[in-house]
Image 1 (cartoon, rainbow, N blue to C red):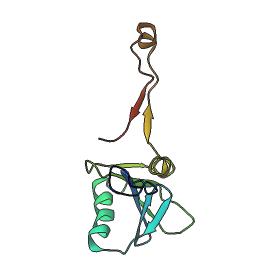
Image 2 (spheres, rainbow, N blue to C red; image 1 turned 90 degrees about the vertical axis):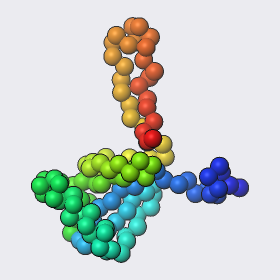
Image 3 (cartoon, rainbow, N blue to C red; image 1 turned 45 degrees about the vertical axis):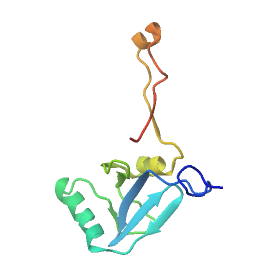
Image 4 (cartoon, one colour; image 1 turned 180 degrees about the vertical axis):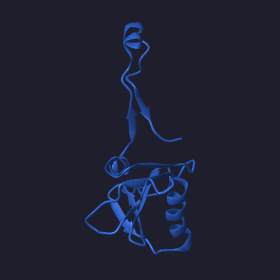
Length: 124
């Protein structure tokens, strides 16, 4: 059976992907998938761009398979935006089924009944 996207229901197309480098090899995280890609020139440039625009303060590179990098580059495929997140937090985010952000309502919102519970779906 296919969902509205035309893809089988067993395959849920991901919105958010996480990228990092293991040595020279680019690695992609999405849901419970971890895929090592070929080191294409454009992907290698992503590594160089992150290093350049952050003045080498943030690294998405690890040299060992068993050691994660400090940061994960999160990509939103709907609008093309990217963020640098701490690796553990970013990994949990791209692995989640429906990523959400939670903001606790303020005291005034609770008293006045204006709070919506603070849940906000992330994405477009």
